[in-house]
Each structure stands twice: as structure tokens, then as C-alpha cells.
Length: 250
Image 1: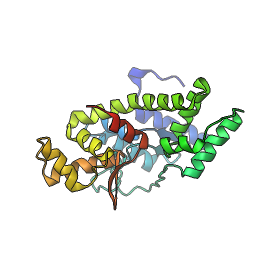
Image 2: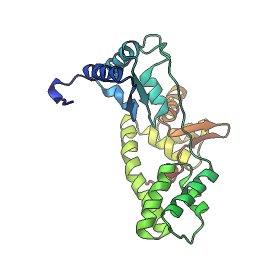
Image 3: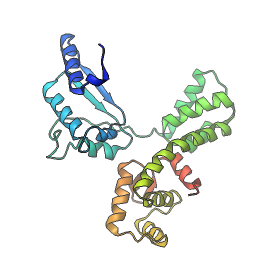
Image 4: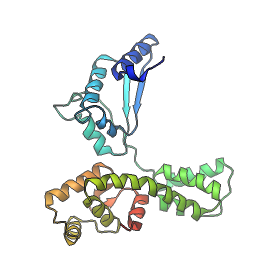
């Protein structure tokens, strides 16, 4: 099937997929990665795409959708499944939260990877896992870097350097909203992780933030999956990002 960009309509494509799936007695899965960015599609914060999804749900039974996103809170905010005014309100859906692997599973993952490559290593894998935490992608990146450098420390440093560039883009975008976000993130990264201490830091820098503004900032950082709250206070969810923030000079 040939598609011409100027004549392309997403609704037409979905209806064609429905016709194809029906004819072949199959279901067709449409997959959206980092789906929170669909809010920039069309007008009114993604309302057009939500209306299209609702139409598809009601009228295209053989077309199914999977949404993934690293910013879980923002993704849910975009889809608005619980908002009575949203076109998607009341539609059945399922959620799957992929959490970081356990230490033991990560260790086994890394060990098996090197075994498959028939690579003999002379260092403690647990030290690598401790630094890179529970994100599988970091271990994959480390493995690739190590196979090139044959040096554990250099491979680790290259992982941090690569991720620093990627995080820099994300941090730059959030700083455009307000420098307050960066102040809060860096403070939490060095252990200033309670409401009162964070507020004191902001006040010391001349940002006399109100309780409601600080609550909003922390809520946004949690929705972006950058920060999480526990009984001990706030923490950076990603250990690699935490180290990058600690080492960040500005």
C-alpha cells in the first residue's frame, strides 16, 4: 500500500487497517512509543488524537493500541481515561508497569550476556550493577562499550558520558519551564530531600516559592518519572541521572 504524505489522513489509515485485519481474520496492533508526546498532535493538547482513538475503539474492533512512555504520569494525563470530559473516558484498558529489575536478575542478565559473547571477564559484575542500578538498557550499553574498550572503568565512563548528553536535553527542556526544577533535582541528588529542606534551599537562592508552587513542582517531577517519594523523603528514580546531577556544575 502506497501512502502520499499530502493526502495522508490517520483516520483513513486506521480504517484501511481494520479492513485488512477483518479480511484476514486478524487483529492489528498499533504501537505508540513515548506516547505522552502525542499531546502535541493537532490542537487542544492532543484532543484530536483522543477523539480518533475513541472512534477507533468504538468502530474498529480489529485495531488495538499499545501506548508506552517513560513519563508515566504525563502519559496518563494525556490519555485522560479518568476525566469524564475526555473522549476516552469509560473505555476499558489495561496497565502494565515495567519496574527496574532486581539486583540478582540484573547480575544474571549481564553474566549471560558475556557468556553468549564468549567473553571472559576479570572484574566483579556486581560492582557494575551497583553503579548502573536496575535499568537494563544501561547494562546493554555497558556491554557494548566494554566489548569495544575491553576496560571496565572506561566502559562505565562512556555509559555515563552518553547518558549525560541524553539527559542534558531533557533537563534543558524542563529548565525552560522554570530554573526551580533544576534546583530541586540537584538538591535531591545530594541528599536534600525533604519538603522543608528543599523550600529552605529555594528561599536561600532568592526563590520565595509558596507551598502550592513547590508541591506543583514536585508533582510534575514525579509525573516525569524523575523523582519518587517514599517515607524517607524524595529521591531521584534513576541512579545514573542522580550521579549526573551531582556532578553537574550549573
